Image (cartoon, rainbow, N blue to C red; front, side, top):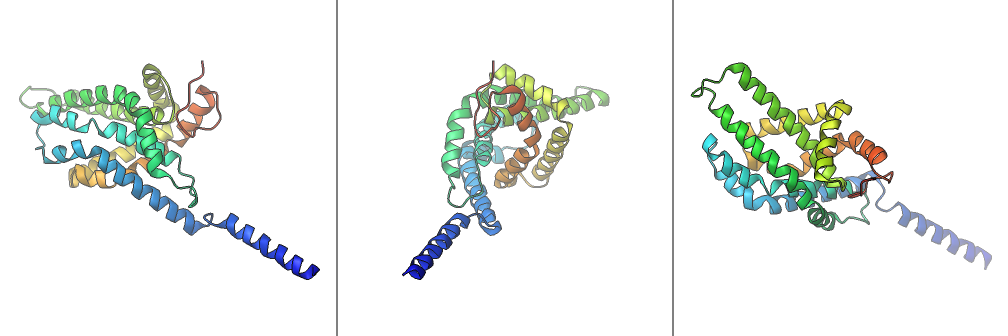
Length: 252
């Protein structure tokens, strides 16, 4: 009788151990990551489709810059939602909710993201028009180089702002200040984002915006991973909590 009880106990222990290990192996974690990326990618395409389709059809001409800006407006909230959903990813097959997290991030962050995204897009449109008329306007080469450098810095600032506003609940003015502050504070993050920007620009130049959109979730994942040191510093120094798992309220 005791041996039967012992055997039953051992079987229960093995079952419990098996349940505890389910979804925790390398293959399971890889499958969970692929599933999350695919789900986020599909939702990213869905939420940017109203602007992506006309953007792809537009001619690459400076006169279309205002229209391109309008088409790119849905991209900001969509990228923010993707960053939020990927930040919540735990790598556990038993706790996969990328779609729910994406829509939660979209609802939480859309307003805040647009307050920094739209002014940045407007600035990019103005710079694009100026750079496309350097010849007719007799703009010197050094001034055009300054405009390109300024556009690059503004885009790197936008990358920081996008990550911060996606994961934390700060005022727009505070997001702008923090994004600028961390350009110099976390130089490794800035350099990594610059490399990511070069890859994105090269992909658009070699193919089209549609191809970049098809790998948008991958770019968002790389951006999130590269910005981890900045996220940790924002959490430790500017919030009351020690772990950033979603939008956090700023400390006083």
